Image 1 (tube, rainbow, N blue to C red):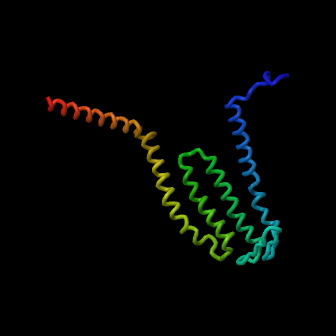
Image 2: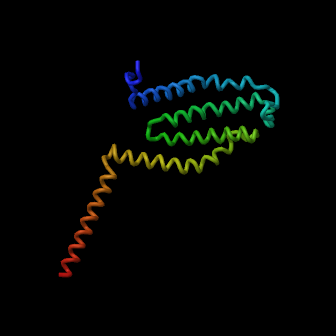
Image 3: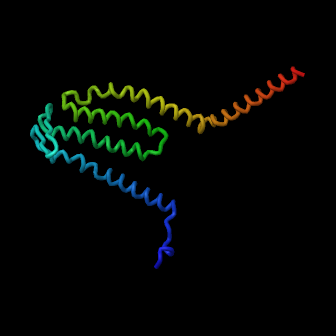
Length: 181
């Protein structure tokens, strides 16, 4: 059989197979999150974790086991929120960035500081993010509400205003020409 007799995949078939592949990867990641969380049980109960690449000392918890429990408690919800953000098709999906940022700051605080201040100061870091994302999402909501609930099409209004301004400009030009005569 020659290559000319083989059916070629269409673009829609390629998109469907890609969608199935990505969906399968997301489903597998979600399904294994409980197992990923319990990986903390494989870490030592002592203060030090020595690997060929680095040595980590748990300063506050005095236990790598407890530190990894904290890390997994932040990393798994962060992973699930990131998956939700990238797969969400709702208009409000940007608001998911706020809890993503919260968990990211908490995870960063646990890994870098290993201090007593777990989950206490991260809200101060979230305030600027919330000040940017919340109005952005509210603006999207207002535009959608105006268009779909009230039936106000802003693009049609802009086009109508441009048309009105153009008529007004032409009328002024005509009046200026009439005055010259």
